[in-house]
Length: 516
Figure 1 (cartoon, rainbow, N blue to C red):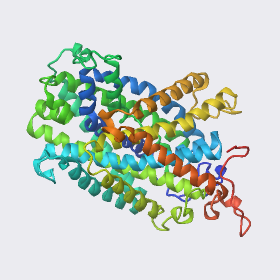
Figure 2 (figure 1 turned 180 degrees about the vertical axis):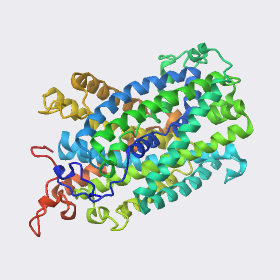
Figure 3 (figure 1 turned 45 degrees about the horizontal axis):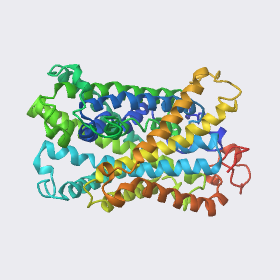
Figure 4 (figure 1 turned 180 degrees about the horizontal axis):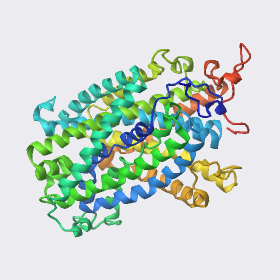
């Protein structure tokens, strides 16, 4: 059996060092587990319903329309640049070193925060399965929920760290099995809810009087409620971030990206729709407090509802695993270009497992620290989640915006015009790209808006601006003062045909003509 080819990796100046063993389903599973239908819909349904009522459901198709435009742009990029650390390497080909470094830095920090946010999902589900899962108090104390959530989060992060340290084969097997269970459970849930519908479709227009008497009316609460849907449909680029470990990534990754976001929209949308239509009493305040889990247990009853909630726990587990994996690949990609402090150590691969061990541990520790720092806040989950989403949107903008500039200049998709047999938007590329950029900018602003309902009172209301501003200032400060002067592909990761001189000069990982 011949050795696997590098699928054009040498074209980007890199040697094939990661284990290329991920197939089509595993690639799709990586994308859909990051999105995670059950994780997102169950974690923030309570929030969307509390602020938007039954009519909050319309935020789901709205977010899908915007995010599928981004996904279409990413599918084009995945076909041309099947390299680890997708957002970072894509921006590197579309913009200059500073822009691409910032894209990678924001995506990396967002991924670490997302691990912490996803890990908190155990707390929103486990105590509703059995009260004994509430590790601190009975859940009614000021910090019971937060402290118990952090403890469960630490357990999950420890698990994802160990699995990723062992290697990508174990990760992909666990992830694929978990996604298979999640999809089966999601379909069963849709069917069971559908046969228990008691409300007419007109309830989807019920705003429950929210926003009445305010300047924006219902539109104001609806904008807040969109956070619940925005939290689910992102991370689809993970399929391409594992491009160096995927067989035939130029064809596999684009389809995996699109299938992941479309499948999530359809199945997730039906779960939300039928849950609202099946809820015994839409005015019950417990829905806004305990969310989708409460509706499931109310409608389906004991054993069936409990089994489905255990499926949600599996979904949360593989979601955290996928996010951790993507963050590792991004850190590895940047370190391989000597674009991070201590890059040589961060980019070192375990010779047996072919996986970056140090990034796996560092990311796990960082996620735990984020959990611990926020342990005393009642708004811990929504605040952490919202900040993660905003940084993801900004990172995506640092790809789609330069891509749009290239289109206006007639420089994309390049000389081949998309006629190379790989995925291309053709003449639809420009309008799709424009919508993707406008959508990303407006949603990032909406999610960052200093709302006490999301972040807390006083200074806490500015959490998003303070945290993200600090991330940008610290990151760019290091890169502009020191990092940009040392950037260059580490010799041990150079493509073999470039490695002729026994002591080669580090190759410039940025395309010729890039500007800072």
